[in-house]
Image (cartoon, rainbow over the protein chains, first blue to last red):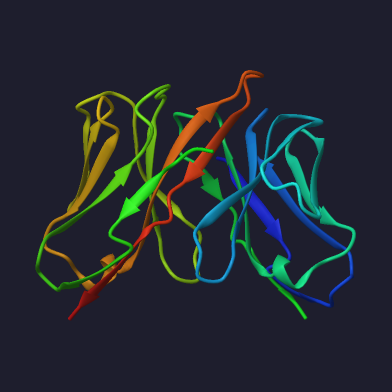
Amino acid sequence: SQTIHQWPATLVQPVGSPLSLECTVEGTSNPNLYWYRQAAGRGLQLLFYSVGIGQISSEVPQNLSASRPQDRQFILSSKKLLLSDSGFYLCAWSPSYNSPLHFGNGTRLTVT
Amino acid sequence: ILNVEQSPQSLHVQEGDSTNFTCSFPSSNFYALHWYRWETAKSPEALFVMTLNGDEKKKGRISATLNTKEGYSYLYIKGSQPEDSATYLCAFPSISNFGNEKLTFGTGTRLTIIP
C-alpha cells in the first residue's frame, strides 16, 4: 500500500532563516506531488506541483521554492523566511487528476 | 486564476438535522470534482471524486451530486452527528498546456454540529 511521510511535524524558525520541508511517498511510482499551505484563517493554497523528476510548476512565486530530486521525494525550501510564511504546510500525492489526493500529516511552521 | 467557490463559509446545524452546501467551479474544461473532509488537527481526507455530469455518490450519511453544465456540486449530510463537524472542501483539477495537473481548492465550508 502507498504511504506518504512528511517531516518535521512542527517547526519554529526565526525570520531570515532557511527552510527545508521534506515529503516522501512509498508504494507507488511517478506520482503527482503537491505542496499546499493553509495560512491562519484561510483555505488551502496551492504552492507547487510536480508531475515528474525535475518538473516543478509554481503557483506562488514569492520566496519559496520546491525541488523533486527523486521520483517520490518532494522538498519545499526557502533561503530566508518571512513572518508571512507561517502556516500549516501539507504535502500530497495522487496518481492522476481523477484520483483523490492523499495528504501527509502536515508541518506547522511558525516564523518568529 | 481558477475560481472555485464554496458557500456558505460556515454553518451551524443542530444534531439530527440534515444540511447541504455548495461548490461552484468553471463549467468549461471539466475533468473532475473532488470533495474532502478536513477535521481540526488532521489532514484532509477524500470523500468523493466525481467525473460525470449527473453523477451522484454516497458514503454513509454523506452524498454528493454534480452538474458540470452549470458548474456546481452539492454535498448533503443526512441526520448530522457531532463527528460530522469539520471543514468540507471541494477541489477542481485543471491541466496546463504542458500536461501538468493541478488541483485548486475552494475556501471550504466549516460545519459545526450543535449537540
